[in-house]
Structures are given as C-alpha cells and as structure tokens.
Length: 495
Ligand code: BES
Ligand code: MN
Ligand code: ZN
Image (tube, rainbow, N blue to C red; front, side, top):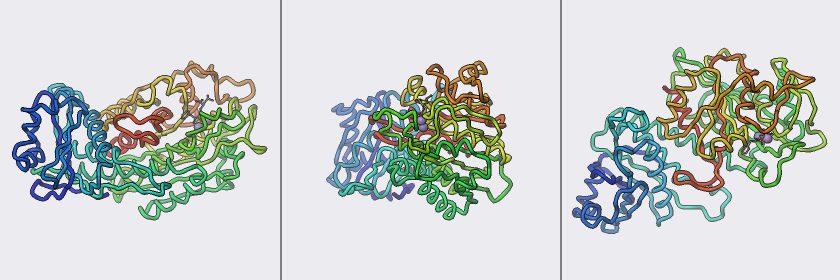
C-alpha cells in the first residue's frame, strides 16, 4: 500500500472519504472540491435533503458521474470529537468500502479540532489528523488472506488531501505510515498459526529484520540461554518439541541517544497451559500469546525507519507452553537469572516466569527505562474488558506520560495498582515466591511478581490480555489481532 499527500488538483482517487458534523458544516478542501464536481449535490444532500445528519459513524455514499465514489461519514458534534472518535469513524468507513467493487485509490481529507476544552484527546491539528486517519484507514482495511484460496482486492494507494501541505503534515503522515505498517506486521505474525510461528520461525524473522534495518542482533539457542542463567524461562519451554529462542535486537541512532529504552514482549508461541492444561475454549486463540513479541518487532522497524534519536532494545523470550512427559510441573522450584527462586503453583502462569528472566536480562543493558508488553492475565479482562489496556509500573511520572500518550494515540489505558501487600498472595514455604496466588487481584499480583525481577526504577508493564485479540469485531477493529499499544508505544518512544 502506498501513501501520498496531495492537493485537490492532483488527486487520482476512484473513492473518497469526507467528514461531516451534526452541528457545523464541513469546509475541508476535498469536500469542497468534490462538492463542486457534483454541482453542489453533496452540500444539498446534507443541508437540504438531510440524507445524512452527521451523527457519529453514520455513513452516506454518493457517486459522482460514476468516476468517483464519495463516502461521507458523520463525526457527531464538533465539540465532542476526540482523536479516538475520528479513528473509529475513519476505520469503520474503511471497513464498509473495502469490498465495495474494485477501489484502487482512496482519497481522504484532513480535519482539525481546536477546542476550548484543553484535554489532549479533544485537540488535534490537521497534521496530527494525517497520522490518525492514515493509521485508522489501515486498521479498517486490514485483512488476513494468506491462507485463503481467493485473495481479496486491496486498496493500492491512499491519498491524504489538503491544499496547504506543509512539513508538519508530511512528518505526521510518515509517522502514521510506519505506525500502521508496524501494526500490520504484528497482526500478520499473530495471525500466523502456531504450527508455523514457532520460536525458531520468529527468531528467523527477527534476524531478517535486523539485516534489513542494520540492527544489532543476538539470537540465543537453548544452550546459550542456559549459559546466561535464564533457567526459569527454559523450564516453561521444556515440554515442547519446538526449542526456545531468546531474541535481542538493538537500534542505535547515528548520534548520542537521547534515551535508552528496553522493550520486552511476551513470546509464548502457544499457551496450552502446560500441566494445568487450559479448557479447550480458552486454548482456542492461544497462538496470540506472542502478541507482545510481534508488537515489539513491529515497533523497532518503525523506530528505525523514522531515524529516531533513542536507543531501542527489543527483547523476547520465545517458547511454547505445552503438556508432555518433559513439561515442567506443579511444585517445581525454578531459579531465575537474578538468583531468586519461584515455586510453580500453576504452570499456566507461564508468562510471568519467562518475563522474569527477560527483565533480569534487560537489567544488564544499562538502559534508562524498561517496558514490557504481555498478554499476561485473564483477570485484566474481568477488570477492564476488551477495549482498555492495564498499565502498571514503579514510576508514576512514566505511567502518567504513557497514559497521556495513549490519549494522543487513540488508545484506551487505565492504571492498576501494585501494592506491596500483594506479596502475601505469593508466599511460598520453600521458595522466594509462588508464581500464582488465587483469583483475587490477578492482574496486580502478576505485576507485583514481575516487579521483583527488575532493578529499573522506570519500569512500565502493559497487560494486553484483554485487548490484543478480539473474538468479535468492534466499530474500529476487525475480530482477531488488534495491534494494540503499538500506536501509543511509538508515540511514547519518539516523544
Ligand atoms: N496467556 C494467558 C493469559 C490470557 C488469558 C491471555 C486470556 C489472553 C486471553 C496467561 O498465560 C494465563 O494463562 N494466565 C492465567 C494465570 C492464572 C493461572 C493465575 C490466567 O489468567 O488464567
Ligand atoms: Mn498461561
Ligand atoms: Zn500465556
């Protein structure tokens, strides 16, 4: 898919998206241009015939001389418009038009909202809308047809239309293009069946990315993992015929980095639960348990393409959590890289065990911040549902900055607490901790467990178990992988 910025005189689109409001009229360049082309019909449809009222996500289609199909989408009341609502409306119209005959080139207009209300989510410039709209279009147009005999038609080009183009618009469009590519990359990798996407397969993809982007790469096999003392991680993978891999890619800017950040993604390529085997229905989508890994591999490509001034380390401990004669068992005691011991209370709480060693590894890198992203607990779904990511950490300023970035990036987050009292849940008689402790406060308890394996005082933890994968489509995103937190993380890293 190509992305271009254009003024109205140069557009080549066969399909266009324009916005309309309930309470004000649109005077975007693309709308005005198409309205003229339609002999004022677009304006009349809205204002005289009231074919569309402008309600949020209402869609009206109008063909001009069979040459261009115009989709007008409502954004609701102007003062209520948030970045997230712009993203949802754009994505939902993209989903509507993608199979509506053979569209090849899609034009979309930019829109701004300058509000008295000074909350970030209500305020955005035309340039910022370029980032939002481009990303949202690609979310809406996304489909995974690798294993379908009949491939779907695809939009080939997206034109962002604005008559007063400037460098800020170009810059934001570029960020949107690489962000949306990172999301597509991650979704494709999560969609890849676990029979293909083994630790070794993903390690090879990581090596390929490193080569393409000239990144430093460390790809460790089982013996090398053992040599580094990551025995807790190794235990989780020991029940599988697919051997574990540990990956570490580094992006370094050309000049002295403004900041060094380690980004860890949970990399369980299939989570059967181990000896605490999952019920069949819970296991159904567990190929998605490497979403964290897929996300960080997408993000480092965007950071490299954007020539970011930060140093970024992406890390993943990749293995499969299976049940077999060699699988780790309830009651086993594991020793992590930092020497702390873990009594296995439940083999299905495997993510925190692999992350423990990955966090210890990150401590050896001399970075300013450590962030992990993980499909960690079913409990976060009970607490926050499928549209809000749980955010935890040990540095409130970092958490605040991240949550603010999520608002700028059209993503929902909510902070959950990590309190020291939680340690009582994980008391073990024979080891430093158990890995689980009952159903209560499951998300926070898991985070408290992780906090014991990092020395960083800027550690942030994202629990995406509820948001990484949707069983049912919502207005913005098709069912399946969502690419959640990629937008926010990229904006966080570059700001
Ligand atoms: N990968 C799962 C968490 C998960 C659940 C992700 C649902 C996506 C959807 C994780 O490894 C897990 O199994 N967690 C257990 C922990 C429990 C045993 C304390 C859970 O949440 O049930
Ligand atoms: Mn599990
Ligand atoms: Zn898991």
